[in-house]
Length: 378
Image (cartoon, rainbow, N blue to C red; front, side):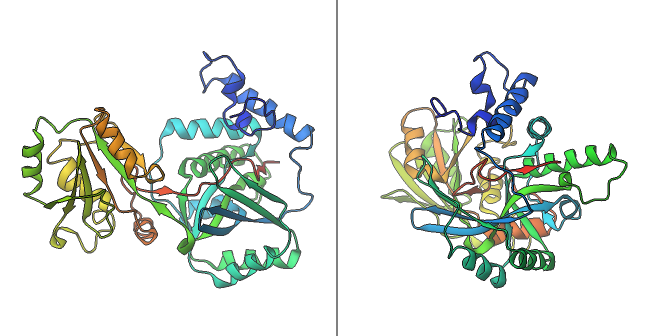
């Protein structure tokens, strides 16, 4: 993808492509190369620094879906105070990678995806800005269109700032490792800065905030390598002890809580869990991803740890249900499970409860692009 494209941002976010194939992608040389490539884009004027602080309006368009948000520097303090809320655990190794990248570049180039509750005043203001000509309008190789409008007018910036300061909470939709890494960098730099007052550039992290009701979560499906020693008929019999099991003539895309699609070689089934099995109050236990684990993956297939068990894999909904069929029909997997997309309201409820979601619960589309806007740390 980057071959022949010297200004591709992959030279920064995946700098190992410019080093020998044997190079460890987490070696110091890779981060140094990323910094070298980033400086080259700055020196060539491909990237330019805004003379004054500004917001950007960012529109994503994928097929008939469109969402418009605002590029911001989100406060690390708000993240620490849980006004910017999480719903996932992070892995230390992935955090470390992000910390090294930020420190090497002295910049944050990968934005965190945030969701904000309904705010008509913000939406109306962003709509006004988009009446003008965009500064960036491009279609990526995956067909997603990325459009950016600068918002440098002081009155507009002040209005946006007031609106976000008045919000009780924002939610991290995607980018937990990026935000956690930014917090670590801020903590380290503050400790070494005798004049720290909480307003340094490192006290914020790059993010794009969209209205929650406009964001799109796709299904995040599961495939398993074996049926835990059960023949297919015996497996279906075990499932019928907990679920209503009905053959389906076509691929099953679940639409209701407690409903799942099951694909065995050559045949789809619709699995329906009784409503009484769905906890009414627990925001994590009532998620479809939790129900599938608690009533099927663990008790029937013996899968205890979704993060580490090599018998299970995950397929993002962007690949379609045909990818589930392909994985099973190829002989690589014994069964596939199609899930309903996790509603945005469910994600927010988990974050509000201070809980975390199971692994691979949400797949957001369309995705943000690295490098369209960066936050440089002075």
